[in-house]
Every structure is written in structure tokens, then in C-alpha cells.
Length: 203
Image (cartoon, rainbow, N blue to C red; front, side, top):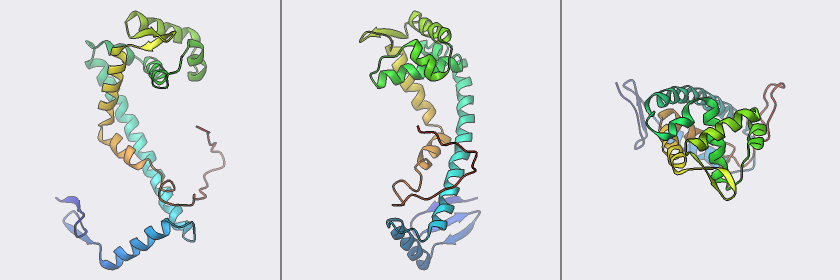
């Protein structure tokens, strides 16, 4: 069974059936691309339909990658016990504190238990405990007057395992689709309306 797209032609084959993009279709698509570069939005219903579909696809991809990522994390905990980085994979709290440490590292910011507790909604005692254990494991070091900078094992492990998880097919698909059509395509933002009980967060 053939399930592929051949760009030369442009002939689409699926289930042994052919879907040929004829000249008229190409011209219509070209006209639409031209309109996308315009500030005019006379075709806003069409644009909104595309945007709604894209957002639904992205949401579906996010659900899939979140599920697959959790499976990956469970497998990771079981299989990397000989790696010092294993400490950061034990629980969701360990992972989140590691994320916070790495963000501070990449942003060259000094972090504190108080700051992490407030930002992440954790009790200060929980944050203190994990940071203390991280130092005891040699995964955190003191640098630039901050006792919570990542060590070589933390930095290298975080980069290695993050990139490994990013290679999952679902993650690649999500990354490819996450750019919304009103960013870099439509010159004019689309007035998209959701249910009134939705609350937009300024992130």
C-alpha cells in the first residue's frame, strides 16, 4: 500500500489512488499565497477556518507527545540507574527542580529555594531538600556566589536526554506545526473567538 507524497508532478498517492493537482489548482493556491501577504482580510472566514484546524492539530499533537514523553520518562528512570543524572529523573519534583536549575544556568541568573518555591508552587522545605540532595550527589556546585549551579553531570545529562526525547516523531511533528498561521504567513492577525470562560495568560 502506497502512502506518500511526490512533490514532482505534484501527484499525491494514497491507498493506490491518485490525486493530481492540476494547473487550475496551482493557480488558485498561488493566488491565495499572494493574498496571505496582503493586509487585506476579505477572506477572513477562510483564514479563520485554517487557523482553527491548525490549533486543533497542535492540541492533538501535544496530547500525544505528553503521553509519549511520560512513557519515555518511566523507561528512563528504569534504565539509567548507573548514570549520576538518574537523581534528576526520580520524580516530577526532581525533574522540575532540575529544569529550574538549568534555566538559571542558561539565563546566568542566581536562583534560591525561596524563588523556586514561589514560582513552582512548592513548599520551601521540598525545594531545600532536593537542592541539598543534589549537592550531596555532586550534581550541584557553587559558582558565581550561587550554590545551586549545575555540575558537568547535570549539564551534559540534561542536554543529552532532552535531545534524545526531542527526536521522538511526535515531538518533531509538534515542533513543525507549532508556528501559527498568523505568524510569518498572514500579515494581519485573525480575530479568533473562543468560549467566554477561557482565560488568556500573558506568558
